Image 1 (cartoon, rainbow, N blue to C red):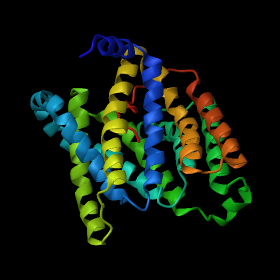
Image 2: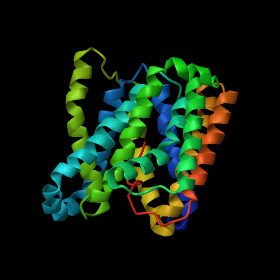
Image 3: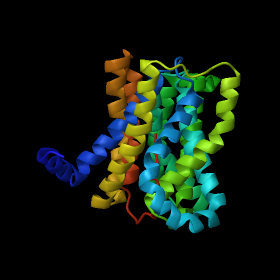
Length: 315
């Protein structure tokens, strides 16, 4: 390996803020790509290939950890199945499916409310109380979601005519909230073992839905675009982003790393405008400001947070 590459890798390995920024860039790119290939790549097939490919790539590195951790994994298999279903099988598949009906820009903005939904799920499952400041932040952020869904005309909410894609993505966000909260119950195994196991179990649970999709005639057609898309989602937003995120958390801690999730709507908006030709409208800006303001308010609230592991997996 060239000396310059080695030095660059060593330098990058110590740059927490750059690693975390790149992580959110890669995850935002996953949303934009999902919208770009909508209609060409079946949503379930894209998710199935993503996690299956990520598992196969990770397996050589995870094998020795999996052998050592297998007794603990087997003992906690029911919880591992629940975590895999909510975070791997359902979440990403629903996001890809929702992007068949709504724009990438809206999809990314809706997902920016995710950290607050996680806080709500933790409260529901573990009775961890929210401070007044956190509650106000949640309300502000949700108002931003309402602005985006209603396209700036709040009176539209009275008719409850949501875009199907918006509803699906919001459902995915809710599932991810419970998935993240349940990570508190994950077994004490190596993080590589945990990722490999959830990738595999999630893909196995996804198999019936994949076979159903194939039976409908909606099959993955192999061409330059689809192969490139499948390679990207298996490698960049899965393996590379997870490696970068885990290293960033190791360097500066989970609490300081968490706010970087909120860069996703900014990167997503930029890419959707640049690459998909979507228009950035005033209601998008208002919704983005409200969501980010609410997140900032909630994330800077006083009091100690319990570690939930919410960053182990994402888009």
